[in-house]
Amino acid sequence: MNDIELINQVKKGNHEAYRFLVSQHERLVFSIAQKMTSHHQMDTEDIAQEVFIKVYKNIKSYRKESKLSTWIASIAWKTSIDYVRKKTRNKIDLSEEPEIFESDFSNLTYKSIRENEIKSIVAETIARLPGHYQTVLSLYYLEEFSNKEIQEITRMPLGTIKSYLSRARNIFKTELEKHHGNNVIELLYNDK
Image 1 (tube, rainbow, N blue to C red):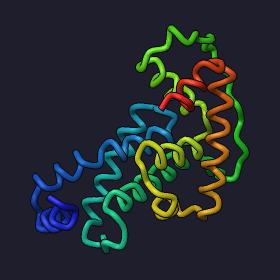
Image 2: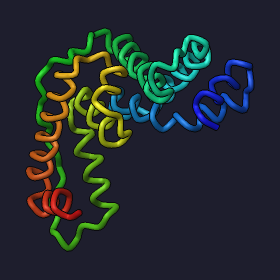
Image 3: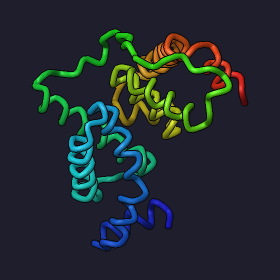
Image 4: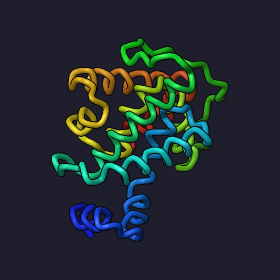
């Protein structure tokens, strides 16, 4: 079932179609919510639930100007920001310069690294990035959204997105090298 058929079925009140829509997009919504809540499970679940309620209530206003996943990601982004703002009572400053966070990882040798360890290292390194960098990096590389789609989701200027991606890549590489040495860098960047 393509997005248009799915949306039409949800608009008609087909609960199975809605469940299918949720199952198709829950990983995306959870990914965005996790990045914004620093992986706090209960907060992530609360946000995801609120996102899918908003999707259901607003499905009739979906104008098909962007992909369904982009529209849902935009709702997830806005809902996450609102949730974090309410929870912390502080506004998120997306122009803030990043901080490099310390890690207690020990250096890993080239021979001891296996694929699951690399995935764990990548996930931990991304988790140390400031939230806005995590989100843009995840939307681009993990969710495979284009810069234009990320702009639609986050309402950030295209130049800001490109800047965040560039900074996030540099910080990511620096953090990997700092905490895991050149062997991990070589594996990730040269092993294709």
